[in-house]
Amino acid sequence: MELRHLRYFVAVGEEQHYGRGAQRLRVAQPALSRQIQDLEAEIGFQLFDRLSRGVKLSTGGKLFLEEARRILQQVDEATNRAKRVASGQLGTLRVGFIESMSWHGVVPDAFRQFREHRPDAELQIRPLSSLEQIRAIQSGQLDAGFLFTIANIDHDLARLEITSISLTLAVPRGHPLAKSKKLRLRDLNHAPFIWFPRRESPLFYDHLMHACFRGGLKSPHVVQEGVNEATILSLVSCGLGVAFVSNATRWRCPQSVVLLPVTDLKLSLPFAFVWRKDNTAPLLERFIEDVGRISGHP
Image 1: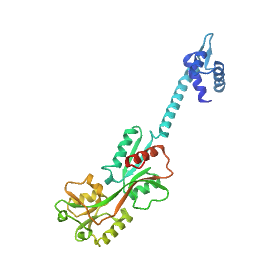
Image 2: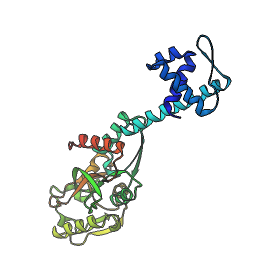
Image 3: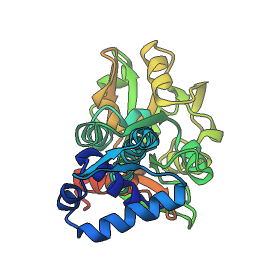
Image 4: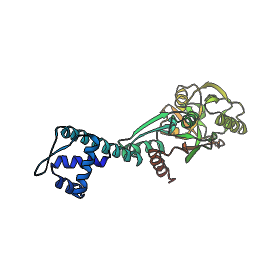
């Protein structure tokens, strides 16, 4: 039994006439009649009672018509859903992101555009560190992520470079350093620092320590650790110390915190959108295109 047998039967069953059914289907009446006969032979009972003018559904045919309609409707719905998935309009996309980069720019714009253009698709977002995102993408727990790529990216991952983020110094409002017109790293030797644990990003931690050492800040006085930038900013706001943060912090900086440039701190953070090369999901492909357009890298 094929779907065309069901479509032919539904047409004749609804029209109660072979001629009108053939006209509706745009097929020859003899061919339609043979298809119905083949279907009846396969299922083992007559679908129609033949009359002098037209046909009438048999008792079994009436029930079979209801079931055939339901099956065809399910097939049509499944086909439409599959088409929407294949065109990137339906499905689930799981994306990680750096919380500090979600207040302005490409990340919130990409999420907003996804929701506007694909209202029926599901977007699952998770704030994670860059290292956590890379592991989740490689394991298949995430489809992609917005992350800092100072860490080495494995060959199985693809990336779209978005921008480069510089560092700035966050100090409590009223702190003596806030009065400095020109800050250099060597001016920070006696400042109490809030720092991130090395395990959060070993390579960036080492690069930052090396940059500080070269600039004369040979051993930062770390009084407290914070696992992410939101926590670090909160601790700075409380007056516990100063901290290096990304310049993206300006979009959500607390009023009790001042951001100061450090003239000889040249370390920058490459920021990119990353995904597995073998992930060819249409929804992800459309999202990559969106991110490229928004970031100016189509």
